[in-house]
Each structure stands twice: as structure tokens, then as C-alpha cells.
Length: 374
Image 1 (cartoon, rainbow, N blue to C red):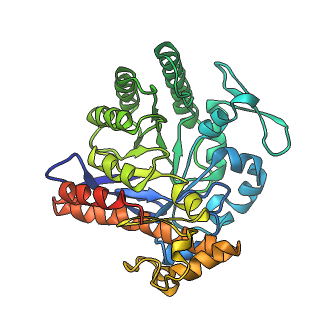
Image 2: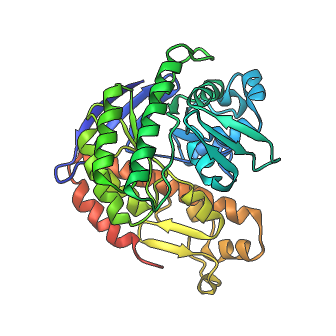
């Protein structure tokens, strides 16, 4: 993977760049739709490419490992071929999903033993097996196996967890050195900054993973107060190398993304646009809409007059509300396409503003607008 920094904002730490892999170019800042089980829920691959124009999507190591299983993906020739997607894919390491199974897992220095949420069978992830699984999946960008620190947690736990993540990181690096990619194209590796909400730990972790010299770097997302998250992001981006892409994992709302771009982050993913869309929440440049509300029953205006995607002007708010009231699957699909299209528009517009050195003032205006409930 190659990364080139093309411009910086005049009033913030925002950056515009370009990543190039064997599956194409990714212009940063970028948002990655989440395709957990080899599918972005409710969206065809043609729509992802031609309507939403996603340059990269995210797959989930834990879920793909359990279903369809690695034997299927290997026989298919990797996830790209299996799901008919010829653009970029990033996979997480499975660490977050294993963390979320806290009542069904047991963690040790070796790794994590966990119980499948599908059939109750027991499995173990280690740094080495996570790398092997991601080799089999064949993503263009693969993530280090880490422990996702619970929130809240005390300083001593956060420090022990960070040190464990660092030891696991070294094992990931060592294993990748002896296990080449399987499908004839390169895979780039990103380590992950941990340390919970503690600034000194995040700074220490950022320094540690920077010294690994990987092709890009990531920061594990944070639960809790959003302002505290911004403070930590600000510290971490001061440490991470400027000439490598920076990925803030699992974040977040449109406002979270803009504020994190301003602090120097480049890559984002979140289930929110698709999940909230399926539940009737639409994000727009002027605020958010609960399309289930009765106020839209006789509103025959377009879903979004900005017309970012074809569904925005093809259908009215009244029609979309009707689809949700009738529990029609098409409603969830329309809302998902709209939200994903909006998120991709947002980061692309941010990129334009960065290159014009007008991002900071534009960002502040957008944050004010998007706070509205329509």
C-alpha cells in the first residue's frame, strides 16, 4: 500500500490524502460501510459501487470465521471473489466482537477462548490465528489482534490491557513475517492504539505502535464522554506518523467524524448509518429525521433535496414513512442507501474543503446544522 499526503487544512489538523492498494485508490478522509458478514445489510454491491460509490468496505473476522467459515472463503478465492466486490476491503481482527461476548469468553496471555453466539461451540482466537484468518479472508488491510478495554475501567486495568495488546501486536508482526498473503495481492497491516480514556496511556501506546513501522495505524474507539474522546484523539494524532494513514475505529455520528477529521484522523467506520437507517433515522446536512413520525404522513417533498443519491428525490418522505409503517423491507433499504450516501458525501466534501484550506469554518457550520432535529 502507498499513502500520499496531498493537503492540509489551514485552521485545523485535517488532512487529505490518497491510499493505493492492489484493489484501487482510496481518497481520504474516507468512511467505510460495514459489511459484517460479507454483506452491507440491504444494499447490493452494484449500489455500493454505482450509487454510494464506496471505495472500501469493512468485513468482520469473528463473524466470517464462524459463518461461512474459512474453508468456504478459501475455496472461493477470498472474500473479494466470494461477495463479488473488486474494490478494497478492511477486516477487523475479531477483538471487539470477542470483547462484546464478555459473559462467554475467557482471556489469557495466549489469547481468548469464546463461545459462538450461533451454536454454542467453543473457539480460541490468538494473535497468530487472527492473522491466519485474515490471510484467508484476503482483505487489503488487516488489523492487529487487541484487547478492547471495557468502559469504564480503572487505570491499572487499562495499563495491563494496553501492555497485553502490545505483546499481542509483536506476535502478530512475527507471524505475518512467516505467512505470506494467499491470493496474489498485498495485505497491509495496521496496529491499534489502546489505553482507554487515559491520555498518558494512549500517548504511550501511540508511540509504541508507531515504532512498529507498519503501513498505517489505528486507534481503538472509546465509549464514554465524546469530549474526552476528542481530547484523546488530539493527543494520539500528535504522536502517530504524519506519512501514514490514521484510522479511528467504530466512530461514529456525522459530527463525530467531522470533529475527528479536524483532529487529524483519516479513516472511519461505523454501523450507525445502516443500523439507524433500518430503524427510520435519516441523516442530512441540515439535521436528522425520524421518518416514522406522523408529521411526515402528508409530506410529499423529496426525502432530501440535496439529491446525493437517486433515492433522495425518487421517493417522498410520505412514501418512505408509509413503507416503515407497513414494515416493508424497501423502506429499510431506501433509508440505508440514503444514509450511506450521505456519509460518503460528507467525507468527500470534507476532503474538498481541506484541499481548499476552508475546512475548519465549513466544519463548524455543518456541525451546527446537523445538530438539528427536523
